[in-house]
Length: 459
Ligand code: SF4
Image (cartoon, rainbow, N blue to C red; front, top):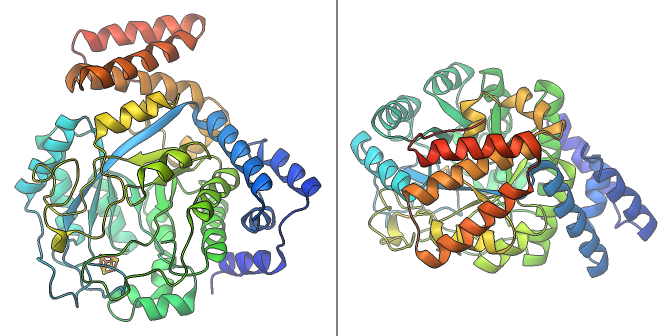
């Protein structure tokens, strides 16, 4: 077993919920923005007391604000294919699901979907595919990236795809992908074996070492996360933190994102209910502990979760959410507000179907700043470089300025309904006014450039 999993197991074996004095001490260390030890993170995961949890959420919100400022990053997934050669018991794309209508987008269809998302306001998307050598292999993903980059104004493509060799990761990276994302599903080896009975994915260690290969191949940014509900969350969440620490020690960069997916029932899956259910309260605790333990990582909550919980997560450390998602290949433009037209081709059932304009409005109403920014990828702030800027505290101002510029562009190009527009515009003006001195004048100048028609204006 990998050393970092042994470390997580050891820390959890010794962990008890902290006393009030211990909790104060841990939270004060978390406020230094250097992350927490596995032993501290394990203690926080053991907390059940409501008041203690309240203190953890409050500190997580503070840390999120100190690292990322008020911004909440919005993104959308583009599902390319639901062919899969694996047989994960909980997934609707599994190869034994004979009721699934299989579909792999052609390059033209993928371009069409990207154009729809771009018209909606997204300039960063994550391409998602089942794991199949032909319908989601490296050659296919390279072709899709080439076509989308050359025929649309999409600015950055991330990818969630099957683990591959270092050589193949190098090819994927050269195609222009930003973040490479892959979920371990569960870090618990015995459960993993049962849940992934056949196919390449049944090799636990090959999947566990996927991020080492991606980083070795030159991907500066990687996204990790267990699928909550497959095994005891205390272990899986702590293992994800240990995974990030392992990557940071070896490559100098923590996980760029830690996603918090929770198992949802899927048409054609063998397992309908989570073997280890995770309550909403536990879910929020996990979000907060990720934030405090790996402060520079984006903590991502997808549309799997219901609207109310997603909003609560924004108050305890989440920094990225998807909006208006379809998990059906080719689903955009054929569905209303992200509701899949055909459940037999989608990966799981969605909990929040609110489209982008509504999510942007809600985020603004909550006092945050919706961001559609892609600046880090345009300016080379990735991997070590990103971590350096994020740790210095400078990311906060830079990101806020870039978020404002991306929002201005969105308001001009997409022009959401008047009511939402007013609320988003008010948030934009409020955050703009909060800048001081030279930076404020400079952002205003850049804003004028956007008004005059320049696009992709950023720091
Ligand atoms: S979880 Fe991924 S690998 Fe497993 S069956 Fe579904 S699409 Fe295939």
